[in-house]
Image 1 (cartoon, rainbow, N blue to C red):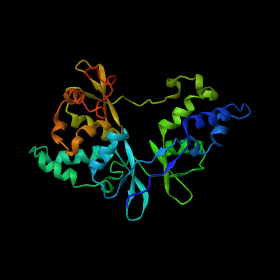
Image 2: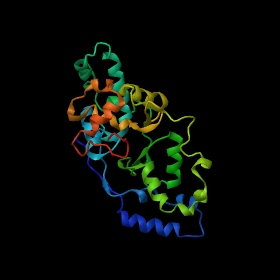
Image 3: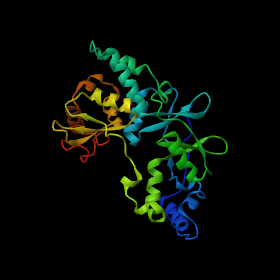
Image 4: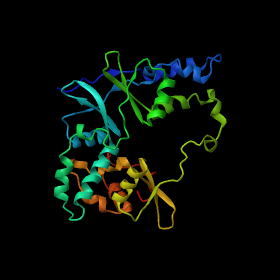
Length: 288
């Protein structure tokens, strides 16, 4: 039995009115406001897209392609509950595990069978980078932000009083709302450099002449979801993302041989795909 799709949240217009009113209160600081706003107020109306414990990996990659998402909660059919996430980075980790087993003999058919032998439940948080750490509907937005930081999570599940999953909240959604009221925050005039936002010891990259497998392996080793792509002169010419793994498993037939393509050839092949759900944005790579 599949899980019911809960339709929750408020419309965008309702959210804008709500936050405009809250942030117009000059007697309270931005942090005070965030500490009083329940996370449910930031959720837009829509269905929670999920996969089940019995679904194969193609069900997840198909969902990523059709809904333009990177992660989905897994509904436990037997327990009728959600207790885990599966993320594209989990698929990246699994795909590389299989690739490394068959690359010497280039036995891609055997690799396909090994890849398909796993289901969504078995790959739940395979990469150890997408913990399932729920928050209640009434949890203050400030607490949600702190939880994002603590668990280094990209999204969090929202549960109701009965412990049922009713929505997901992502970092991006929080940023979208706060950006409209950025002037309320003391850091609004501070530079990104001064705040050290997004700064790392180095920018991880892959050469466009290197194999796609090398790029995905670099992502796993450094716990990132994307890499800068460099040309022969060391100039940044684009990026490679964990979400690009969906192209290796499109049309419900995983093709591990694509991991041996150069990053440039791989991205050029993507650019020739006429399916609008699979075509990457032209702004990402100059050769697209």
